[in-house]
Image (cartoon, rainbow, N blue to C red):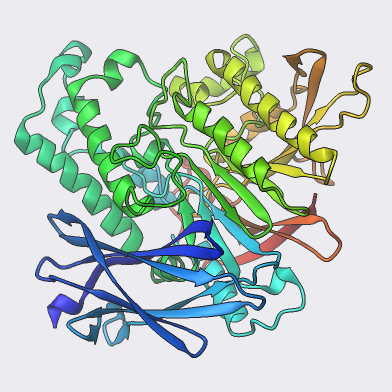
Amino acid sequence: MSSHNIVLGPLLGLEGEHANATIYSVCFLSENDVDAANLAYRIGKQSLRSEFTLISGLSRGKLWRAEIAIPLAQLDQVCSYQILIEAQAASYALTRNALVAEWSFFCPAAKQRVQLAFASCNGFSSDKVRAQHPAPMDYLWQRMQQQQVAHMANVDYAEVVDAPYAALIMGGDQIYADAIFNQKQPLYAWSQKPLKQQLSAPVSDTLRQRIDSFYLDTYLRSWTQSAALRYCLASIPSIMMWDDHDIIDGWGSQPYRLETSPAYQAMFDSAKKYFTLFQVRGINNQALQQATSAPAHFGMTLRFRDYGLLVMDNRSQRTLHNIMGSGKADFIQGLAELQAGWQAGQKLLVISGVPFLYRHFSESDNNIRLSIQFDAYDDMADHWRFSTHYDEMCSILQRLLQFQATLQAHTPAKVFIISGDVHVAASGSYREQPNPANPLNTGNIVQLISSGIVHPPPMSMEQSVIRLASSVTQPDIDLGGGCILSATIRKDAAGNRFLFHRNYACMHEGSDHKVWVNWHYETIDFPHANDLTAPAQSQTSPALGYQVLGLPY
C-alpha cells in the first residue's frame, strides 16, 4: 500500500546518556494519509513497542518521532527496529524489486570504549563542481556502509577499531542549498535585482511557499538518492549540526543589511524549520542546551561512554562581529556540567563546523590575500582567526584550557576539536607554552579536520595557494595572564599539511590508551579530477579506491 512508503528516513539520532539509559530517537516522513505509527524494536530476546508522535505536517508528508531508551548494560547490544503502520511494516525501495523494512544499530556496553565516525560537506556547492567530479557521489558513504555491515556481522571484536560505529557526527553542510539562486529556482528573479531593491523587496506568500518547498525538496533529494547514505542515516545513530550551506553559502558572514532583508530572512526561516525537523529531530531532543519551544540556538551537550560532547551552533546567531551569541553562555554551562560528572578515561570532543586551527588568514599578508580570488570575503570571515572573531576564539580556547587544567590534577583529560567545512583533511594542536608562574600547566588542544565526504577537494590551482598560505608560520596566541599558545598544523613525511581528497574520519581509543584518528579517503586515478578548467572525465571506468591514514593522539 502506498501509505506504507517511507518518504524520508528513518533518521536515527543519538541524544546521550540519561538516567542510566542511552536515549535514541527515530524520525521518518510518511505520506499524508498516515494517521498513526508505532515503533517495534528488539534488544536481544526482548521485543518492545513505542508510539510515534506527529511533530509536523508538511506539504510532502507527515514527520513522526519516537524514542528508544536502552538501559546501560555490561555487554554490547544490538537493537533491531521496524516502523509499523496499520500493523504492517513500512518500507522504502532500495531498488525496484527490493524493499527495506527493518534496520539495526549498535549500542555499546556501559564501560566500553567506542568508535565514532565524523563526516561533513555532504553535497556540491555548484552543478559545475558536481559535473567535473568523476567518482560516484556517494563513494565514501558506500565505504562507510561496507565497514558498518562488516562490523555488525561480527560484534565479538577484540579491538575497538573493529567495533561498529556507535555514533555518526555530521559537522555541517548536510545539504547544499546554494541552488536557490539558480535559474528557475525561487530567488533567481530576486538575485537579478540591483542591491538596493534586493534589500527592500517584499516576500509574497507565494514566494515564501516556493522557498519553503525548495528546502524540503533539497532534503528529500539529498538524503534519498544514495542507498548507502540512507542506510547510514538509519543504522548509525547520528548527531548533526548545521553550517552555512544548510542555509546558504556564507550565512552569518555577510553584511547585516543583506541578512536582515526580507528575502534572506525567508530563507533562514525555512532552513531553520527543516534543520530543526530533520537534523535536530525536533525540539524535544534531550541533548539540546536550550530546552524551549523556540530555542535561539541548537548547541548540544551530551555524554556517551568515554566521550563528553559539546556541539557548537555557530550559525543560528552568527554575525560578522559575533559567532556564538547566547550560545557562548550555554557552551560554558555545558563544560561545567560535563566537568561535574567527569569520569577517568573520558575525552572531551568539541564539534565546531569551521576549524579553529587552519591556514592562517591574515588580511595584511600579501600571500594570503592571493586566496581572495578563490575564497570570497564571506568565506574568510567565517574563520575563527578573522579579525572580528579573534577575541571570541581566544575566550573559547581559554575556557577549554581551564577545563583541562581543572581535571588534570585528578586524571589526564584529552581535548579535541573536530571540524569540517574546508574540503581537506588535516590535524594540528594548540600547545600551552611553559609559564614560569605555573610550570606544571601543559595544556594541549588537538584540532581534527575531516571534509568533505561528498564535496570534492579544492581545485589544483587553489591547492597551490593553500599550500603557500599554510607555509606562513602560525603566530602564537596570547590569551592573557601569561598564557601563550603555540599553534601547529601537523605535516606528513613529505611535508604536506593537508590531505586533498574526499574523506571521512573515525576515532577511538585503542588498547595502547592513545586516541587513534583514521581518515578514510578516496583515491581517483584521473589526472585532472579537481581541475575545473579541464574537460569532464569519462565515468565509465574510473580507477577508484580508498586508503586509510591513521594517526595517534
